[in-house]
Length: 217
Image: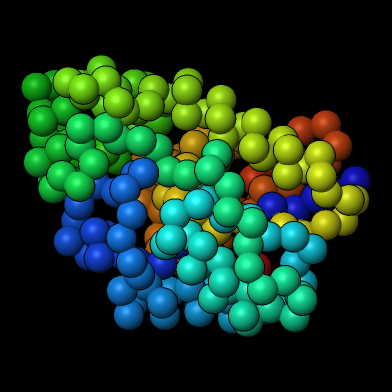
């Protein structure tokens, strides 16, 4: 048995362009972001999707629609799903990313999200964001993973053997998936429009590839 999940990070948004933290807040795709999604769709056009889901943010929905427009499947729109929304960064939503990571990691000599992940792992890095949030709106790593894993399991439960499923979603979310289901390092940015393939064999999940922007899918 094999069910294949194709996680695609949304195309570049205006907040991405301006290097702002973007989790549950949303911003439109830039022209480059639209091109990112179309390019991902063309690379994935050899794979006929049996189902498609996205985060319920406009950037992910639009990315999913643009990918599906290039696909031989009859599906036109992904199913928006709140559980596939990005990590909630709480007080740091919309903040300059360099400033944010300096605020959280600077006191221990780490000035990037990549550095925090490399040193502590992604779940602990997310816990540090949650602990630093004065409003306590940020999600902890465990809370984030609980809602995400339930959604992934539901997608698989609703699928048939051999199904190929599109999930248009977010960078930190994809890194959590890869960290949980493989030993692949995730202390790198998930590229806009990149594809990450995860397989379910009826017993466990495995990551076939991460952060792929090549034609070999």
